[in-house]
Structures are given as C-alpha cells and as structure tokens.
Length: 462
Image (cartoon, rainbow, N blue to C red):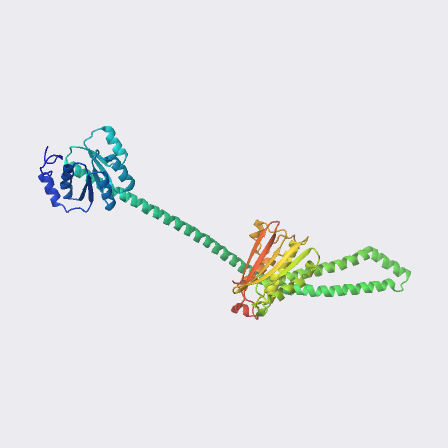
C-alpha cells in the first residue's frame, strides 16, 4: 500500500509529502468532521489526515456518534458501514432524520451495488470503497461541504423567499386596503363635489324661482277672491228683475259658455293652481335649505321638543289609526344646532316612515346619549328599501314615488343638514321587513364662519 492509501494495520504515516505540505500550508478550517469506525487504526489514519485542515472527532460506534452529534454541530460524518451494534446505514437514517445540516459519507469495504444504492437512496452524499486514496476522501469531503453550503443556502433562500412572499402578500393586502380606502375617499370627494355643484345650482334655481313663485302664490289668493266676487255678482243677476228678453239673452249666453260647468271648472282650476303654487314654494324652500340659504340661529336646542313638534305637524299620518307610534326617549343634553334645519330632517324621515307603513305598521323613535353625541333612530316596519335603491337614496332628485308625489330632495336635504352639523347619518333596511335611519349629532359644536353669517348666502361647500 502506498503512503497515500488508507490501511487499518499500517503504522506508517498516512500522509504523502505533497499532501502534508499542502495541508500544512493552509489555515486550519473550523469545520467539524466526525469520523465513525469500529477500527481504531482506521479512525487514527483519517484523524491524522483530516485534522490538519478540519476540527475532527472520532467515535467507535453508533451510540458514541449520536452522543457527539447531540453535543456539537458537525458538517460531515465519515462513517463505516459494518460496526458492532447498529450499522452505518442506521446511523445514516438517524442523521438524516435529526441532523439535517450534516452530510454523510459512507466508507466501506463492501463493494455491492445494492448497498451503494441503498446508502445513496437514504441520503448519503457519497459511498467510497475501502481501500481508497486519502486524497479522494479529502476531495469528497470538500465536495460534500460545498454541497452542504449550497443546500443550506438554498434552504435559507427558500426561507427568505417565503418571508418575502409573506411580506408581498401583506403588502398586497395593504395595497388593496389602501386602494379600497382611496376608492372610498374618491367616491366621497366625487359625492362632495357633486353635492357642491348641485348646491350652487340649487341656490341659483331657488333664487330664480323664489320671486315668481311668490307672485303666483300671492296672486292665486287674489284670483280666488275675484272669482268668488264674480260668482256673487252673477248670482245676483240671476235673482234680479229682468225683462223676458234680457232673461232669454242671459240664458243663451249661459248655454253658450256652459255656465254651471265653467263655474265649477274655474273653482277647480283655482284650487289646482294654488296647490301647484304651494308645491313650487315647498320646492323653493327645500332648495334654499339644500343650498344653505336662510340659515336660522345656531343655539342649544331640546331634540325631543323638535321631534314632538314635527310629529304634531304630521298628526294627519299618525292619528289615522293604522300606524302605531312609539317614543323611546332617553335623557338628553341640549344640542348645538340650527333647530329649523333639524326639524326639516325629522320631517323628512318621519314622513317617509309614515308613508312606508301607511297600510298599517309601527314607527319607533328612539334617542340616546352616546359619548359626546346624541343619537336618534327612526325605524319603521314597512316595505323596506331595495338594495339597488339604497345606493342612491341620498342623491338629489332621486325618488321612487310617482311623478308629482315627490321632488327627490327630502333625503338629500337631510344628508346635507346632518353633514353641516358635523354629524353622521346611516340607513339599514331589508325589503319586506322595514328601515332604520340612525342620526348622530355632536352635543357641543360651533358653526363655521360660513354658517354663522346669516346676512349672506354661503357657498355650498363641505
């Protein structure tokens, strides 16, 4: 056997001059190598050869090897196959199960293909046949260390990749959340801009309609009085003393103009025109409220007083016998607000609730004090609101009522008023079960400079 060959019986140095010189010239590595063999001479040969470069330990059997592996981390185990007790294959299984960062090289005198395949299949890095060159063992260990480093790096890369993927998922979720929030804010901005534009339009329309509507409404009263006077005059002529010829001419004229029908039509037309003028006046008032015109005094107000006065105004709905009205009032502090505007809110919501249960049902008005706000809920057991309608109920001029029965401004005005009071309004509804509006208003608030100036027409901005 040459100097560079491994032997279990030789007392000669296992190092060739070239190998020894090479190893001695290199700085000793801190990598730990465990040599496992039941032959002490073999262990010593491997130890002398490898300890010049690595930190080496030796074990004579399975149990000693496991004890050392448990005490320190070893990069490579160089193990014999056949040993007393448990074999090198069993040691290989145990290492691969418990010490994942340790590479195993089997060095055995058994040159059987099946044994080699079994070892490789169980995770051995390599299988060397005794006797073998020590340089081959050294190079195999170097490759095993390189492979181990690649495996560890790959494992770390996988961990880093999973961590990065998790961070990406979190970032994606955060981006999605921010995108949703941005969409919500954009929708609010669009809604606010739309409301501002509509407010300016409403202010202009209200201004243009206010005087003509006043003229029409005032003149309808005069027209009604004039028509009544003419009717009295005609009735007088019917009872006055006339010649037969005059009576005949009067009868002919009455027949030509359908006197009785014309007189009844005139009365009906005057009533219809007056009703129409009242609707125009109501629309103008809603437009003025919607656009901040005609602000009332900002002061402390009893919310219950406003609710009760509104219910009295709506008594024609709530005293019919079909509607059960429930009041569940809690003790409330006075609230800073424009009383007239909040009364408009109560009017709109309570009128809508009454319409929803006009064929029979229940309307409940609840109040409570929550923190720094007063909360009012108005619920009905009516028909509820369809989901597609819920998205638009606060849009100006949107109404589900037949033409002529609603302007579509009620809830948009309500929304505007609550926003102006720095409050919040929400709605919950299920078709066929009913609807609940919840209004929250700060107890202590202060009008903006815009709101407190009652001598000007403030811009519609919020």
